[in-house]
Length: 123
Image (cartoon, rainbow, N blue to C red; front, side, top):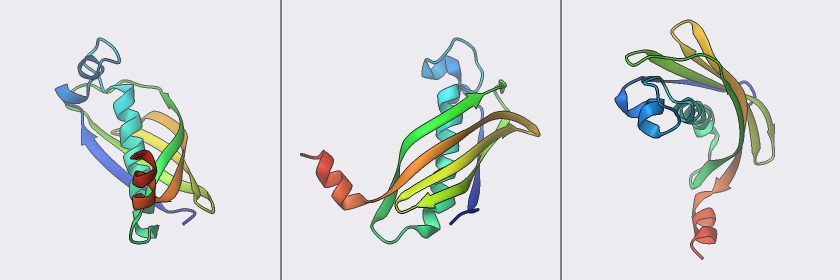
């Protein structure tokens, strides 16, 4: 698992701008959407390690969003597993717009039994 990686991509459009999601007033890729893309990459990085019935949940994320990306830009996020202890998995995250790094951070996820998890929150 350590060293497993995944990269996901998206295009900045009117639906994922700071203006559209309420995290700012400008038509640029929103910070919450950078984080969501990074988290999606983390999920993809470990999906092949999960047993049937398992999923993962994010519990901590620390991200610096360091550069803006305009509408029409292609954005990618890469997650790499840096540590795995029991059910806890830690990741290094990096986002790019073309060749430019636009964000970096760390993320923690826990592997869970999906049915048991949903039963707990259902009451």
